Length: 67
Image 1 (cartoon, rainbow, N blue to C red):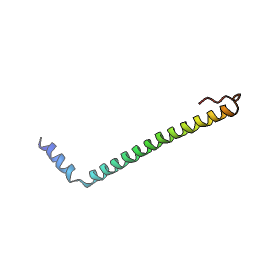
Image 2 (image 1 turned 135 degrees about the horizontal axis):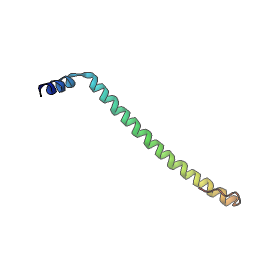
Image 3 (image 1 turned 135 degrees about the vertical axis):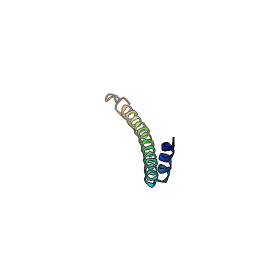
Image 4 (image 1 turned 30 degrees about the vertical axis):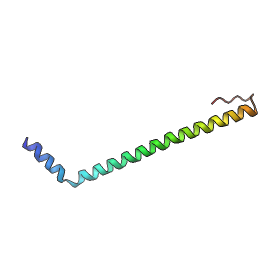
């Protein structure tokens, strides 16, 4: 039990562990922003594609674009 306590005391005093945690949090935030951006762009592109297809089908129904 003393070894475990000593391990945690050393980890608490170690500055490198704090830096690693900060980088991990930063990577998590960047990942969340990237996923949100990709989802938003997907919705935008899907809507634009549907609008384009409906305009093509209205103007020239023989082409037949399916959204």
